[in-house]
Length: 298
Image 1: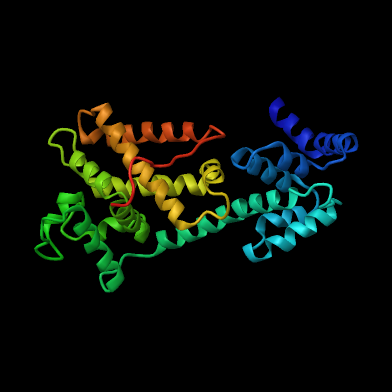
Image 2 (image 1 turned 90 degrees about the vertical axis):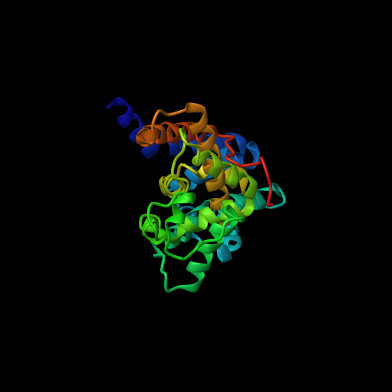
């Protein structure tokens, strides 16, 4: 209870006066101190985001919802409001611009990811069908698919004869992630598939992949991935960066699963949660970079 009371008092009263006092002493506003006192990355952008969110000024708070095309004008308005002279602080404008690209870009990325998640896989859509067949060819290059509806799909970890039913939860996003991993990290994807088909330690490759897409989506939605993207993308995070994160999760989960040696696939939820907690712990590190670097496009 005391913690909540202190937080309210600090954010509502003390923080404003503390900022005012420091500005009188240093001659710089909080945003200037953040941009000059931290290297590019999560530490700087997270502090800048909090500063803007906590501001009593509408211009500063509104910066968090500015479109990419209006960011430069927005930065100019902030500099005018805070009376920041470019001659005295020449690096501020560029530093704040990058922070805002990351902050607003994260929100835009979530919107793009959500749109793909809501898009239903349709057998009547030639692009959807082509993507699904491409996944098979990438993972099973020496095995011909006998027909579109076949038990062979089980060889790459789908549950039934028609994979479309497995995409209901994550929509087209689940398929796109599977294809992206297989296309950009072909050797690693086939290695993971071989582990998934192990007679004792095996698991359903595609189903687990879709489950990991849900994990990535949930982390993105909660904001937990901000430190990762703020550290790895010095600009606007795009869909490809989200797909890259999925590749990391798919590869690292396989390593984790093999090392843990579960007794049964029935324990999947237990180990999935353990892996999830490991990832969340990594994301608590201000310098976190969840990047797959073991290979490149094959």
